[in-house]
Image (cartoon, rainbow, N blue to C red):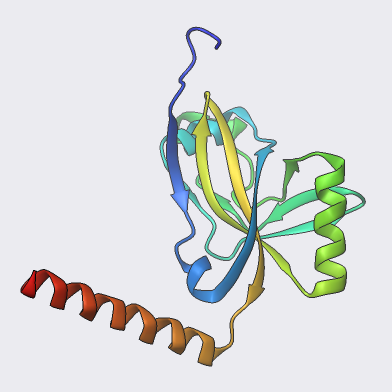
Length: 156
C-alpha cells in the first residue's frame, strides 16, 4: 500500500434516479480524464449527472452531459461545465459494452462518482430502460415490504 495516500473511498455523487428509471445489469469502475480545476470541484462535491450518459466513439468511452461546477478560484483555468470527458477503461471492456449496446438494446449510465486513493472514479452501469408499469410494480413491492417491516416491528 502506498503511504501518504487516502485509503478510504469517499462518495462524491450518486445517481439515485438510475434505479428508478432503469434495470441495472452490470457495474463497471472506470477512471475519468479531468483538468486540475475539475478535480478540485469534484473534491468539493460540485458534480451532478442527472442527464448524463456514456457513449462509445472510435473505441473510446465518453461521458456526455455530466455537470462539474467551475472552481471558484479557478479563474482562467476553468473549462466548460458540461464538456465531454473521456473515460479510462480497458479496451476489451469497451468492446464488450459496445456490443451490448448495439445488439441487446442496453444503454450506459453513470451511477456513482467517488474518490478512491485520491483519484476520481466513476461507476457506470449497463442498463435497460423501465416501462411505466415496471416502475409502478417496483413501487408496489417496495410499499408492501415497508408495510411488512412495520408490522413485524410493531408485533415483534
